[in-house]
Length: 258
Image (cartoon, rainbow, N blue to C red; front, side, top):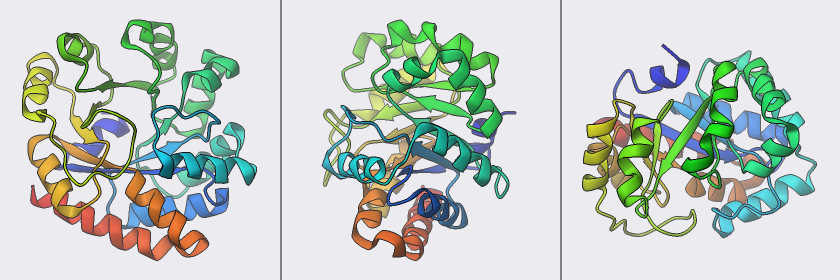
């Protein structure tokens, strides 16, 4: 069983996101360990990128802060290798295709394996082009995680059937960010996914409160939270650690109640 599979093996999963290097690499590592302590089951680390087209203002600003403070992909690989000495929690990178392509698919996948990265989420990699990367990544035990959005419609079954690791269900149209309501017909999307795949499905985009996390975990296998955690980093900076722990703990508790 892979580390990603284990994340969903003991009930509903809480998945937390940080932008790597925001505000510094050392603090990112500290914040990730606080998330682990708070009960997170899987960690997403965003690789800072100059044009993060799927991100809203909160994560865009975090990308800018991280890049300004010298975060690079190589340094994030080093950070993950350091985290791996402390925890076996599943770790996935959220990145865009250009940095991976420039790095070279094989080299990037090999470095993921060496550092201890379990999967890749690439929002701008269309399903139809996934095969240019997925088999190479798989050879290094790295899953390319599929995203299913409300616009996927007729492609949901096809995407789900080919999924690896877990399926990232995008709750709402548009970019990442905190939302007061999630109005997508997620039940129908999840029904189609479950008919096509036995991979766990977690819902992300817009989740920020324990109530929302509980609702989403109630219909899926887990809840993914990004912008709300990045907002805590934005607010408290270097002192965000204890606040992240308390927030993640409250969200994990809510997910477990689902």
